[in-house]
Image (tube, rainbow, N blue to C red; front, side, top):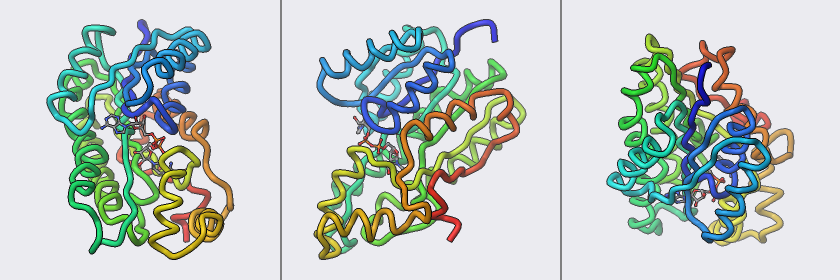
Length: 260
Ligand code: NAD
């Protein structure tokens, strides 16, 4: 590699995206962060990541639910870093409710951020990766891209769709040095999971402690949460040349959940 590669990681101001961004920066890439949050907190995190890793790190708060902002995000990143070599489609939101009570506006938002944004960002960056003869598209799907749980109809739909996108893009990139894979985490204790504990308690008539023990970790035979560092390490591996024959895969990091 004769230049530092550039990665964009959507939804990297928190949780898994932040862990992936840090791991890619530590592996020698420049990173465009994305996501919402307090401006000063984001700047502090950006500066710390740059200091720790020696990478050039920037942040752009484009709203991944909006195709026009995704297009602007791509232009801003190219202007800032010159190219986009690695795309990590990670931004995601969740709502837990029985389908008959599921708010349609939350359905629309989940489909836009968790599913359509991955299609748009890949659509807008793929030709340049193919022309370069090297690229990586990494979709952060979920164990819920492989199996379902009740009360997560929109999320499970969106994540299954992302695995379909992953397989298609893998085939389109196969002869051009561009791989596309989905990482399928089980439960990782991030703000996204912490927020759904009270909603799940309500939907299932349980206490919050029961939700953690009997719903979340009950799904994972290891009885442990996965960590953002573990997801970051897999993403960094997928960007190495050793991983170039891994494409079109949905890779669970779920403590054995989907083996059952
Ligand atoms: P999180 O809530 O900690 O982080 C979500 C990130 O997405 C934040 O940076 C947030 O600002 C950003 N975001 C939200 N809406 C956005 C929008 N419209 N535009 C741009 N950015 C937006 O969540 P997380 O747990 O780190 O989840 C990250 C991804 O991992 C999601 O796709 C989620 O579905 C997936 N995932 C999480 C788990 C888990 O257990 N935490 C398990 C499987 C899959």
